[in-house]
Image (cartoon, rainbow, N blue to C red; front, side, top):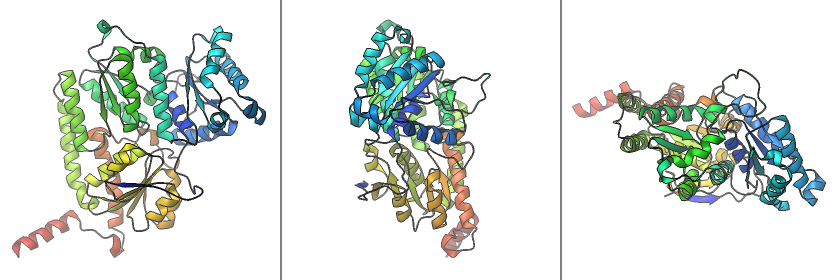
Length: 456
């Protein structure tokens, strides 16, 4: 059981943590024709906008209430009202997600009260779904903002159905923020193969998957629709992925009575066996041959790759659920989790397969990675990797010095297999370097050693 400690430094150096407000904004981007609105200063929104543009390399819809010094002191009601009026008139969204920031939270703006007054004074906004979410910068991290936004959409948008309206093949899927658009597409194919009808909330595979639209739109250009969200109460099961989605799944269950199944991760052999068994059970459909073959391919990849993973020391820095998924998979492949750094507290941290998990920054990661063989984190860890002369494997957000971050696949049998090849190739490159510290036996050498021992 890992010991969780909090860095005692007076300031963050090369921060790992990202704001909950931009995590919530990304969740709202998974809804079709939506507009995330950050209630705070212009700089808060500009930071998130630049981060997402560099990661996804797409046009990102985000707006701000542009709080000034005076509005911060006197209250931001007029800023919120004016922003909603302008957004409604110019972009015509079906949903506006309003996320608080540190400024508005410290001031104590009653955002829910503001929206009630604005609704009463502006009937032209009646056709637009307005969802507010509390995401202070000083509490939680990126995945907490995502989870809070999804929970609020469940509370505000899903209709409570009549019993007889239950859809016998519809499954609600609540993906965590650590899942890429490519991951969601892969999961949709898996559910479809079991003749199930999955509805993903949020669905960034529709809005941030890198496709070129037929015409420009100032809002999101794909994802789950508000109408589909309202019908989620007619599903017969909910699947949540990542511990931070447990709250949204429980809220959905309390609101509609739909039972849920939580998978803390979907990277690895055993966890995907559990997913296939569960889907087969609820659908009545045997596991398709396609996935039986993919499972066999994954096992073969594990056999091929374990020579290069065994005993390797890996340092990881990521959001709690992404850290959990990555560290467990690497540990199962034979790696030692040499260092683990994360952004916020979470129940999954105690189960990380290492002695200590530090809630800190990338400076902590660099300090703990001196004797490691590989660093695993997002693009802001590249300087530390260069200084330590270690390879860097990119995960999470942001990844701006590589192409295809949005399509990186890590779930299912196929995604796990691809990860083995990617990371295994990094280790193989280290094997062939002419330094004795990084030399490892090849599969052929290992077989020769075993033969010698047997003959002796």
